Length: 408
Image 1 (spheres, rainbow, N blue to C red):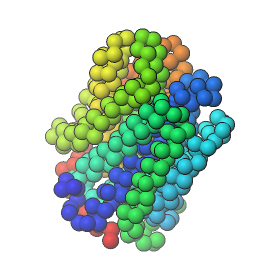
Image 2: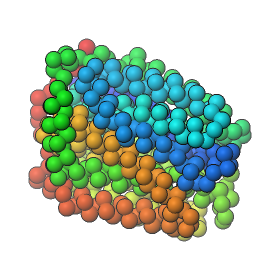
Image 3: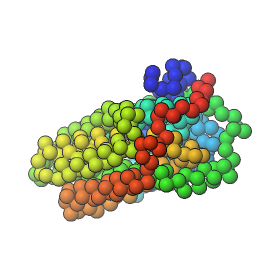
Image 4: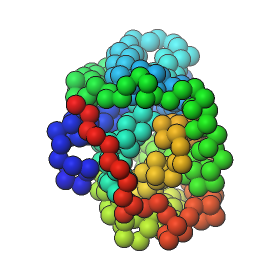
């Protein structure tokens, strides 16, 4: 933690809690990716419909993000996050007992709404605890927690579903998520802001307008929307592909693809280091082009190429996401909480839309899904290259600002 704003125990508690929040949130959001084929078989639905178990949650999260921002401003970000993760964990424990597919999707939407209180508020909360010189490192630490959580959920769920069924896998994953939520609730310090310090609704509207009329912020929101959509499309349907000809891999073995997510733990941190040296814009653009290369490598029907492409794609994705998410706070001229909530909205809206569209493209084979992914990543690249400031104009990690006091 020596890269963060200081060794104060309050800061360490904040980072432990936000990492736990990131882990339990992403675990609950994305463990159904490993169960999509099993859910499809159980309910006799096609891949794009089965993927609604993922997209339903991300839709709920996207539409709820701004509402949670308002709640966080009213009752405190820490209190709001505690409520969010506790409610989401409770819903997660009920999911395995649902017997209707439409009800399952509905439950996932509601769970996503609850989870909406975690990622946007966590990023804003971290932004308020560290100065801008350490914003990238702090955001990267949180992103690393989300990487681990998303990976754990998939690796827990897939093997259990292979030897039992998806309901047992969902129950076990729900129990592990509940433990993570408990850690987050116990570790997160009480919000140190007074009620009078919280923005009024007019201030929130001003923050929304300011961020939505800021070209650089719009470019960052485009990264969230497009790059996250690309990543979810790859992971939603690659498991399907590997279970079909010519690979014919069993579900427990296809879960190995999710190990590629471990690369994100390292790449998120390395991206922060390289951005401090070469500028955020250069690293973001390079990461996007690397994602395109990785997606292209997954097209041949050769398993080593598919796995190598997935690793390259995933490593580059988490580098890009770390840069973009960590740039939102420093780029905001006002309304940091609204800025990060908007990023979250676009992030999960892209996950929902392209996570579903990837299934439609998959009807033309994996080449259709991979081609869609490469196209939207190139659009993200063009947007970033056009609208984001050049290195000399960046609000970078070297810019000193007043440090916030650690919560007690």
